[in-house]
Image 1: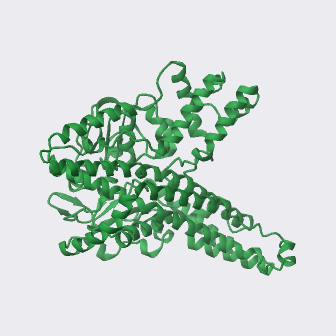
Image 2: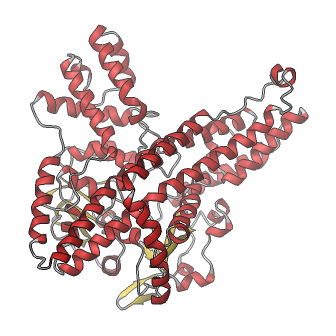
Image 3: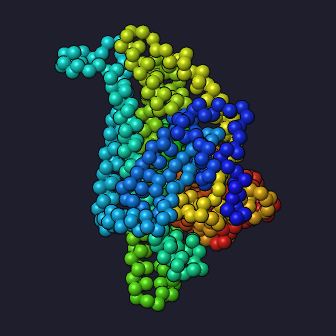
Length: 605
């Protein structure tokens, strides 16, 4: 074991293969494997984005994002204290490390470049952000328009009669690569603003920590609470549809456990009231139901549009609340009043005009950039990515119809480079008038990978591995994942103890007691009951409808600007995030106390 002081974690070389899945490395590229020198570096499990073992194709959601994050952080905007993020995979789980810059001379050199480039974005944020949204809509439109050639017995006559000179099998490869290229462009745009958003908040955060040494992290975060962001829009659309159901007198159709297909069929038989509700439903559906049931990193986390079960599971409760005269709205106005009270209280502690001016400027910038920190997720991880996976699924159908795969969904058990090979096989066979050879090659591989993933899902990965570094300078690592020297010490202590108290980040204020509901996967979301306390590895934006049902939230991973923390504050409920081990220490049915003021979760019984 290696450590910094009393903080100890296993080394990468000490992580044993999971029995029965010793061949897991065959699913992933060589550059994702831990190297001997990696024992000298610190890594943490990115459970926020990858809470499950990774299917072979889905590792593209690590490979391409980290390509883009590092490029923007280290090469484009030249952040002074951090370069990019490296990732490795062990037993199907993604571990990451941020590469810090610690030389004061190099930091100063990079700072001059950063100030010019980042300053341009900060000074023109609103107009540049509007341009960003236009670019993202353009990318979404482009990927929606991509087609997968059908490869009929004879190509279309127009190819010859218009002298196009290019047969359909060419477009199999071109259009598949087009999907990958657009996904890469999307992630470059994704990180274009994101790290700057975190950076602006970190500067304000560090100012507050220096000016007010006793200020809790949560208090800084609450100064930017109560800002409208579009990631709440899907849930808002459900509330609007629930109100319309009551107004139109079709609310009786929305009962717990209702089937979306049954309800939609019944509405078609309800005359004009049913038609009005259906018209509103279709209007909400595009684009707001293009929200993943996960967080946009796994192919099997389908969108609400693909699987209406999630939104229709929330509608009955909203209908019941409306009929009972209960308010559905988030306490946004109360949050705004509270944030202004907190701002005034701390601002009054500053004695110099220069300090107050700096405080005002940094707070203003943090509030300006904050909506992007959440809004980008809808365009990128949700709307674009669910469309991207749907297109890859269509290529899977092409492979299945040509006998290479047993079913279209099996395409996600192949790395994207292997899909390229399989498509080349089909292109060649169509050109030659023969049959592809891929079925005999890939189908046994796919069957073995499915079996290994089933074994790997029960492995309990350590939250961190390797020696703890002297510096953790990456703004996203602290704000998004909540990884600091203090949390690492807490994780290490929790791993070696059986105490009844679990420590994490005080993400949202308040103290409540209730029954725990431990959910390890988004697929279990339907199990949550009114008044329970959600305990999970990490939440996703599409979980918003259940935040109206629960008393509090506890997560294994996350910092003060993680989605779970932000949403809990906006919904006015206590939350503790970044606990490292809550899902391992707490069992469903236990009585627990969540102290969102101190960042402590107590197991009562």
